[in-house]
Length: 201
Image 1 (cartoon, rainbow, N blue to C red):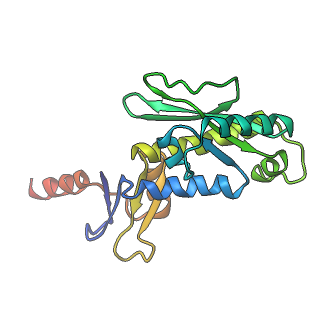
Image 2 (tube, rainbow, N blue to C red):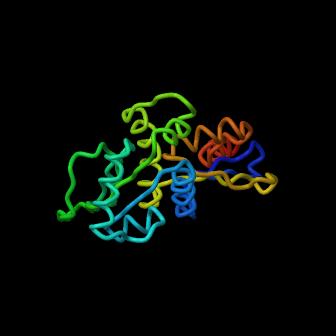
């Protein structure tokens, strides 16, 4: 945890790990589903993260066939656990339901080209799979950090009506927000210790 004080040392702003990373996960997944993305997951953990019921092998195979037949964008959700969870969207490149020791197989994301264009802020335009994947990587980073509890938040001083700000992907991003949003809160404990030592020297 990092704490920043105002000049009088009477109020503080803190940067710490987010108390409710599951809220960030839910918001990120809802952003995707409200944009037209459909998720089909064979692995129960992935289904839980993506807020869907686990699908059967046959249902997922049907979804793959449907996506290919109708020209939908089809992505693999590539994730697993090895010293923490990892989560990726990637181009569909064949399929397996066999779990390796550290990876969760059998998970896909499907979206129409029309919905994908709207998701990218380009309604009515033709977009490529690469453009969609680039944007999905941003969401994947949020999802991965939320699953692992690695997101940060900023807690403002008591005098701030908003109080809590989150979520940030790393501590540096949160600190930058503090310095911009609360310019009077730029002092650390060591700054006051230095002042005290100078006064008592």
